[in-house]
Image (cartoon, rainbow, N blue to C red; front, side):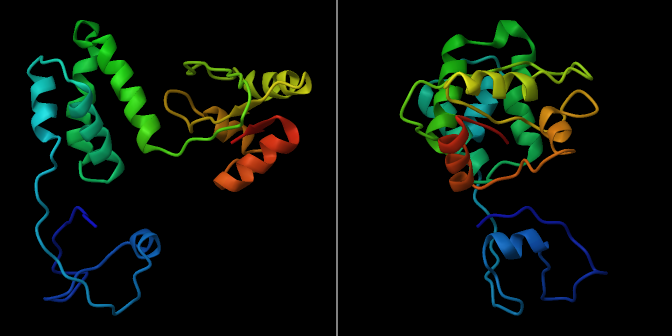
Length: 190
C-alpha cells in the first residue's frame, strides 16, 4: 500500500504515524497493528506524463500504465492533473490516446455484462435544473430495453444527477445490488 504523507509534531508522537479511518477500513488495519513504513518508488508512469506535457503522443502501454497508477493510488492529484492538462488544448488530443484511455479504464475497472443489447443515455451535464435522466431511464426500460445508468456527483453545476436523485432515493449500491436491480427492472439509477 502506498500513501501520501504529511508531517505533524502535534497529532502523533515521535516514532508513530496516524492514518485516516478510511485507510483503516480499506486495508482492514487493526489499531495498534505494527506497520512498516518505507519510501515509495516513483510511479512508473511519470515518464509518460512528462512526455505528454512536452507535447508527445502516448502509446497504449504508456496510457495503460498511467491509468493503472491512478487506480493503484500511485499518482497524487497534481500528477494526475499534469496528465489531463494538455488535453485542454484540442491540438494536443490524439484520437488514439482517447481510445487507449477508454480501453484502459474499462480493462482496469469493474465492468458488467448484462448479456444483451444495452442502451445508454449520456450527457455532458452542467445545465442546472436539467433533470431528464430520471424521466428517460424508466421510459426506455418500460419498452424492455436494458438501460443501466450510472451518474456522477456534481462537477460543474450545483447538483449532478446522482445528487438530485439522491434527494428521493438511494443511489449508492454494490455491484451485486446493481446487477439484481437491472435484472428485475431493465434499469438502474446509481
